[in-house]
Length: 116
Image 1 (cartoon, one colour):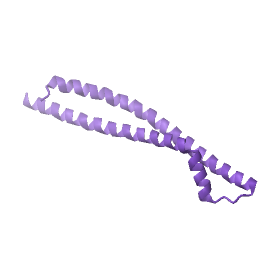
Image 2: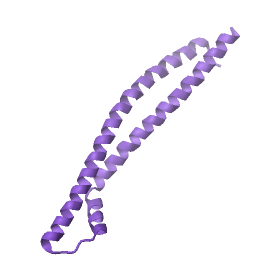
Image 3: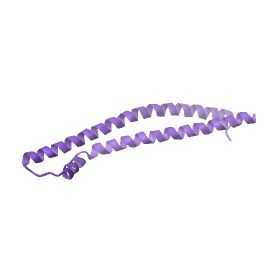
Image 4: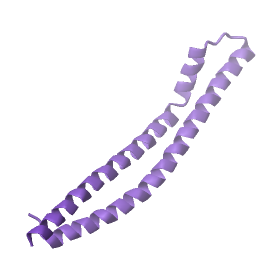
């Protein structure tokens, strides 16, 4: 069983970690938005380029073929956007876990006050 002092120390450490996570999530949200915008822009550019090239050469290009061309050309950017979104999601989960842990520590601290 944790002592009152140990509980206090863990609460303080967790509070500091929550502040760090808040900063990290702000940065991750920004990074995820940029990565998503870069991917979507590059994808649209690739579709337009594929259509333009087909038009210039007189080649028939179906919409699915233009999409496939864009998917292949932007695979790295899509991967980066997905990883950035996953990082944001993971940080949100870490904050939720930290808040739950904080609630548990506060409950434990309250039970110590009731005993003493």
